[in-house]
Image (cartoon, rainbow, N blue to C red):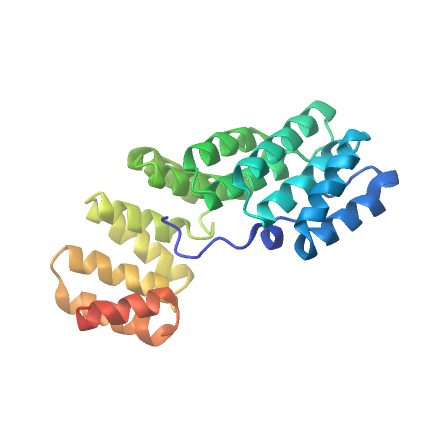
Length: 246
């Protein structure tokens, strides 16, 4: 996967729905609280609630509980159903649900599904910053599908929509290097360094770009900086391995 930071656990990363029906709020909160402690019970509770007409809120709790159990096919099916029900109800929750479905698909190593869900989410995004974030996520999935040109286009769009989008310039630099476009890679890594000059991820990629062009001295300088910036991080460890030839 292209993104240098691992995806957070879905339950932590995915917030609860903003506005279940007021009459269902306590029931929804109780179901969500149950997800981490006893996901099997949460699934049973959510399924019963869904039969009783729990709608989007019940389906969402069920999806999170299935994801907590790493039952990815079931979780994806539940997220899809929740997002579709939200769109039909016009309750304003569909965007968040499609985004969570995409995140689940990436955890399930189903990048094609993630792209499909992000395609559903993008038209619902109301501002450039969010659209940029979605484009970065879509690019990540496209890289996993080996659709590099499309991924590069998404990263171009993301950094244009929001020049400060998280990971945007770094991912653009990494992908451009892999595609042999060193001019774009160098320009992108400079933009990444402007925004986070102490980042081990940025320094490590700067070294990779230099090494790919045969500039071993510059590569070592960047890798040393990465190893010093955060020696216990994946980028710091990878930089140290590059320096020692491991």
